[in-house]
Length: 153
Image (cartoon, rainbow, N blue to C red; front, side, top):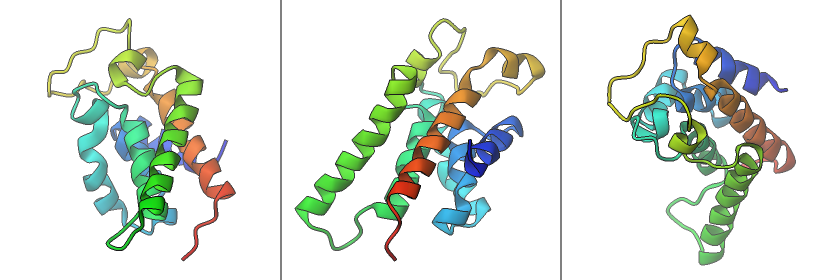
C-alpha cells in the first residue's frame, strides 16, 4: 500500500467521487492545486457523470499519466503511440485485477442507475459499494508506474 492509495481512499470515504479521489491524491506529483484537481476530475465519477462508462478511477489514472507523460503541442507519431500504449497498459493492469474498466460491469449485481443524482454517502452505501477497492487499485497501479518510470522534467 502507498501513501497515495491511502490518501485516495480517505478522499473517497470523505465524499469525493472515485475519479476525484484518485486524481487529487496525486497533487503532490502532478503539482496541481487540490481545488483545480477536484474540479477537473469531478465530471468523471460514476463512469463519467454517472453514465456508468469507464470507471472514474481509471479515468483519473489516465489523466495523471497524461499530465506526467503525455504529449503536448509538439509531438511525434511515435510519442503519441507510446502514450496510448502506456494508457492501455494501465487499463490492462486494472482489468487483470477486476476483470473490466467499465463502471456498470464493475458494479454488476448491485442496484445502480445512470440517473444524474448521486447517491447519498451513508454507512450503508460504503458497506455495499466495492468502489473503494477500485480507488485503491487505480492509485496503486499509477503509483507503481510512476515509481518505475521516473518523470523527466
